[in-house]
Image (tube, rainbow, N blue to C red; front, side, top):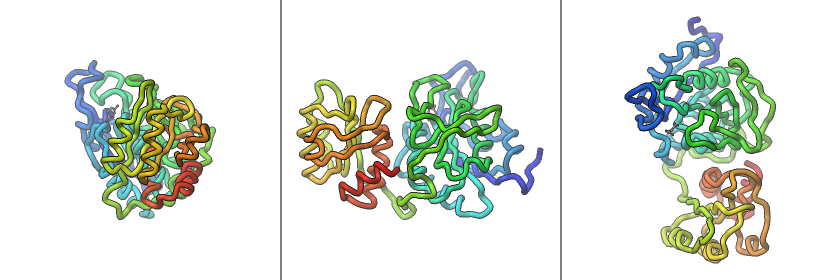
Length: 333
Ligand code: SIN
């Protein structure tokens, strides 16, 4: 089928990753070069995408996504906003490495000022592998972004026939194709290529967000500290000294903090840092716990994992340093 004006116009923004990975032999699933193939090669491998949309491709970056940066996020968010503001662009598909895909998806979920569909996809096997998963993932992402059902759902993630929300999804397995999971539940699935939704996320998302990053060249410096038995004050004190603006503590259980780190984090709040308790458990909501935590001014990261707490706190700090307002953002987004 050829492109026609009736089909939605989607722009595919390529950023690299294993979906664009190239290995020396077709059995290799490690030791390949991520992001080696350009957008034209990816689209040429799946001509069927043009059955569902008019496609324009752009190479925004060629990264192994472990190297994702605030700079690329700002560039990507600006480009997505620019494109979606055009009347003749109906949606965006972003090809991305799986390692930090959930973070980019959440960053866009908080900074895209449009309700038009934005879908991220990637692959666990390089494009050159036997049974590469990238081509079907790309086709499904295009079908999802082309569907009117995807309007105002927030930024979506689509791999392995599953549809997830940028807010909930996380990579859970180092190598399996079935790696993306949402502890609070997926939104739906691709049934023989047809999007089927079962759930909606009741939190503010793309098209209803107060975070405007168009004119920013950098984001506030926020770090994550991972709690563990035998923890101490080393990294917290180093963060205070380095001028970090905020800390996410990936605590044990319900965001619990080792007493040696807790005293240091209380010093951090006194020094003007924002401290958010998250959890290393992989699921669940961090809720108020010890009185000493609230007395120290620690905030709760709700059900966001530590890496997404970091993004929300970065963006929150572009608006305010007021503890109550920032806590409210963790309940709203
Ligand atoms: C990457 O994240 O860029 C490499 C790994 C992958 O895409 O699966």
